[in-house]
Structure formats: structure tokens, C-alpha cells
Image (cartoon, rainbow, N blue to C red; front, side, top):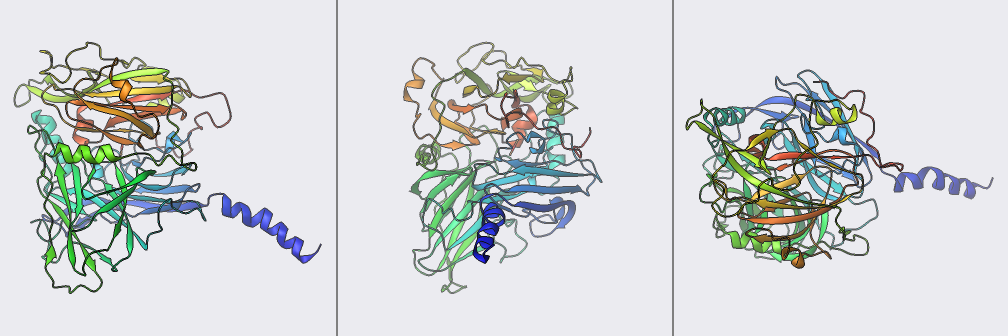
Length: 558
Ligand code: C2O
């Protein structure tokens, strides 16, 4: 054979598949305790590889990722790849007692999944108790090799992980709250890449803080992640505007804004151009909470944007903090979000609906003789306070085990009332491990309705295993007769976590094309603990790649 046809053969059989198919990327996550001294009240925290935030997981669209997690701490551990679709690989999703039993001390589990049809920024985090306070990090999914971003290529990319820091042990914080029946203590600082910032009162030194160095006139892609437990955050860069290009690993129509809103579990990619005078500019992460009834950590996490030519002793340009209760700023941001909906990245919004669901989300009060007020605050969807099983739901589903869950989660509120009014006289909820069953490929419309029981409050609701389209939102009670006429079925934002506004509702649509058991919950960890969660069982389809894969051999046992 001619040498050139040999080359052609090598190209076709070896190199082309390498270029077009994904690679396999191996990561090792050692879960270890670490004495952490950078922030106020140094303490031992649970970390991955000794780092807070944890390591960034880099991959490309189409890659297979294998993360071997080894548990070297005294507590049970699981890791969730928040926003990764996990098509037919629910066993690798991670929520404890939903898709797996925890990895016990001294044990290992290899999470094995493929990144299909997604590119952008996501996050990974522990999914058991309140461990994700310190066990979290970024997932960066680059486009396939040779595929450009649908926006001007940035000079550099930077990951910014926003989080919360508690002086005390987080498990002690929530345990104390569960015993008293009251709300838990709020965090003591907001952090940016593990630093609270020099003026926060929670830094180890006056020079503490994350610095983003920029060259004048260059453009940077900031991959911003809210890994906080309980706080929605506003994010600003003094003197600069930001252009939003992606949220939750889906591209958006670009828009320019000076204040971002980011809820726990959400990610936002923005372009920031260093178009100001050489100097130093403050970056702020401050809370958004529009209910006066809910306690929140009022501290501001800070970082610095520093131009290469700036004098390092020059004063930092500051910015006016967004008012903590600014519903209008929050809505302005949320209402600006649209799917890119291009030929290459279309918005495939389900146009018909097979299952039309309405879930109330909110709090409740149940009797508790041993509690401080004789009652405890709980949370519920459709009045069901979800009880975690002691066997993983996915196992129970796959192996047809009875007695672990029931299939009768109500698709509508059992009693209709004025949800956003003063609430019913009876604030009590019922306990249950109830799931909602969906046939493969059903198209689902789910309206999430906040309630005024106790007090209205915004809730960042996250669905595992799916992206959904946010087709509508409004204030007051959802009205099936009039609200749908304003739905956007053309270019609604596609994401995995969205805010249900205080005293309002949000409508989402998705196609149930991923078989398994998928958690739906409020991404405020305190609300998850209180029971604001449920799960969908999505049945197998009949075609190839439409069934849940068998469990991996090393799946932890309970
Ligand atoms: Cu980011 Cu169920 O979680």
C-alpha cells in the first residue's frame, strides 16, 4: 500500500475517532479533614483533596468522566454533579438515599458518567446533610474540540466560586435547629474562591482576598458559581458591566447588566472587559432576601479586579451594594434571561403537555412537644414533608423493592386555598416518601407555587437529571385560565435551578427522556432538611439507550 493511503487509514481509524469522540478523564477525590485557618474561627473542615473550594473538574462535551471518591473522614459522603444530565446513569447522580447509599468511612465509589449535549459551567457538591458547605467545586465543560463559543473568544477564563462560611460546625448548626424546631443560625461570612475579603471581618489578614488580574482592554470569561447553602447572592464588579452568555451550562442571548443574581446551585458565565482606567476595583457578593421574616447573613464577600498597570497600593474603587431586599433588581435580571435558541443550539421547548402539575412550595408548622415553642418549622411540596428512606430510592425502583416509597405524590394541591394570601388555618403538613411516576418521554408542565404559610419567600428549586425551560413566572396565584397565555414557548431560558418568586409562581416544562429517580428540591439546604423535596420516577423507554443502566459493581450498600 502507498504510504499516503496508510496515512489516510491511520487518520480515519485512529485519529478521527479520537478527535470526534470524547476522551475519558480520570479524577481522584480524596475526602479528607483539613485544618482551615484562612477564615475567621479556624476549624477542621471536610474537604476534597484538602482544598476549599475543591478542585475544578475540567472536561469537554462528549467526554466520559470517572471520579474515584475515597472517603477518609468519619462521616458518610456522597458527591453530586449538579446539572450533569446523567442520561441513563442515575447511579452516578449522587444524592444520598435518592440514587445511592452513602460512601461510608474507608470506602470508595467511582462516579462514571458521560457529558452529553452540555457545555459550560456547573458545580459538584456533597449531597448529604450539610456537608456541601465545604465540599464543593466547579465543573468546566469546554465545547468539543474545534467548536467555538457562540460569543467572542475571551482572553482568559476564571472560575469564581461563591460560598458561605460558618464559624461553628455546620452539622451542629442544623442539629441544634432541628432540636429547637426553629430556624438555624445564619452563616458568618460570604466567600469568593475561599476568601471573605479584607473588609469582611472574617479574614485572617488585611491582605486576604482573591485577586483577579486583568490586562487593559482584554475580555475575560468569568464562570460564577453559587455554592452557598442558604443564600441567594447579588454579584457586582465596581465600575464594570458584565455580559451574560450562559447559565447552568446552556447558552443565553447575550445581555449586559451591572448586577447579577445567582441562587445556590446556579451558575452564570459572563464576559467582563477591562475597559476602565488602570486601577483596582471591588468585586462583591452580597445577599438577596426579600422576605423581612427570614434571617440572612448580611455580610459581603469581596474580591479585587486589579489591572496589570495599577499601582498595588492605589485605593480600591467601590460600588454601591444592591439593597438586600431588592425584588426589582432580582426580577430585572431573571426577566432578561433568554435561551440563545440558534440553529446550532435550539430551544426544544415541549409544545404540548401530557402531565400538567401544580406543586405548592413553602413552609409549615408541625407539633413537637420537645421543641422550644411546642412546634417545629417544616417545609413541604403539596403539603407533603418528604421523609428520607434508609434505602436508596433508585435501588428500590430498579430492584422492585416494596415498602420504600409510594407512587402517590399529589400532582395538584390536595386542598386549594389562596396560596399567597394569609394561608389556611391549618399549617400542619403530612409526612411521606411519595414519588410521582412518569412514563418515558412524557412532556411535563410543572407550576411551582410559593405559599404565604408562615411567610412568602423565594425558593431556588433544582431538578436532578434534567434541564427545563422556564416558560413563565408571575406574582400572586397561578391561574390556569389566564397565566399560560403569557408563556414564552419560543426562547425561554433553559436551566436546572430556578427561583420561585416570593408570593408568586414559576412554570417549567421538560420532556421525561431520562429514566431513573430524580430529586426535585429547594436548593436552600435548610429547606431541603425541613422536607421541601420530592422525586420523580421516570420509567424506561423501549428503544436503545432508553433504559436505566444496571448499577455499577462498586455502588455503596446501605
Ligand atoms: Cu445541587 Cu440536589 O443538588
